[in-house]
Length: 379
Image (cartoon, rainbow, N blue to C red):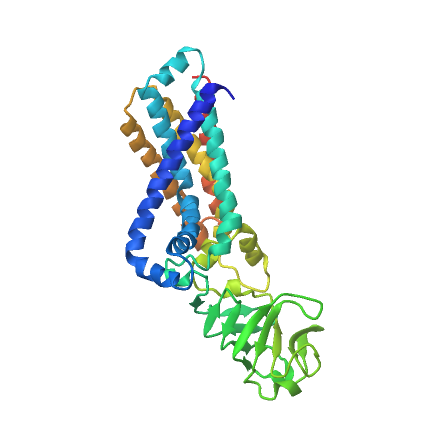
């Protein structure tokens, strides 16, 4: 890396950093006006107010970076080139026989690194905090109650419902397991005080441990039952690892699938979304399948958007910086319009399947981005 490469790279990264801090500062200041009392209340639990603020806004800053990183990178690209042109440094470098493509190479590599960092945050970090990303300071520890989305397990014939869902503890309050299959004396309904998700181990597959079962009565005298030589409903009658009044319900419906908050899907990782779609026991909507494919293609699409703007910074027509920014905003709006139309088509099943609809913007953007990249390599 040459000295001019380091200079351009530092200028670009500094612009990205300043833009992000400005946006984050605006977000924190405006939100703190409405949530300050709740933050102060949280600090009375023993932690200082600055630590509470960092714990609350830290995950939101990561989410903000994921939502705006590509656009900030794009704007920083334009501002950096505009600054180089205004100071005459770009003209001096071009006069030495160096092409635009070579000058912009450090910024392109940095853009790829930023978009890759977004991908890492989106898949590895944000899903860890999604239960606390509710914009409410009282949910700082992620211990939120939400309604239970009724979900039918097609393999076992059991509809899972309940009063409230606590995701941090993976617990359903007052669960209802409505049975649409023949399980002997269990009848058509299992009622309990709580049901806690338990991962698979040597004693059982994954499922819910229902405690203090109200119905059916005398649960301890009902033998375990199942389908196709596979136990589904287990009781202490023949399962010594269960206590009195407990019933274990085998299912592949994880509590993540029972959430009603949009963050359950919007902030989930690709691996989790893929697991839901591939689960044959639970119906996957067209919108969920479209969301999965959109998440897969998002990183290359973001980088393609940066490459689409690249020829504009060459500015062979001598247009002013703010005219270039306006043109870039127009391309960005068209880009997101294309993504929105494709998402709507995939979610409704109109014209295209979810996979084709989600990949359609990439098929349109990537060839254009490649052609525009080649156009500036030797200019």
